[in-house]
Length: 99
Image 1 (tube, rainbow, N blue to C red):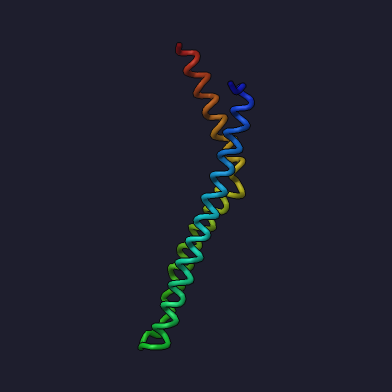
Image 2 (spheres, rainbow, N blue to C red):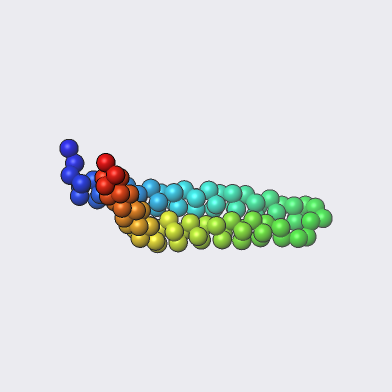
């Protein structure tokens, strides 16, 4: 059986690991899809009349989302996990008082 402190540490580590894994997966999918779109845009540019670099728009738009995922899922993940733990502890205290 785990103590409350052991559980808190394990849950915190698990949350950080999941946040970082989620960002890495998001970044890998971004790289694969954007590579495909850039290749497609380049091929259309070379072999057809298309002269507009439309692949820039999903690159920038999705890049903004990826940047926020990095900030909140990687850089600030420990802060977010601590805030979540504090909320859960406050909730547990309130429900303990009601019982």
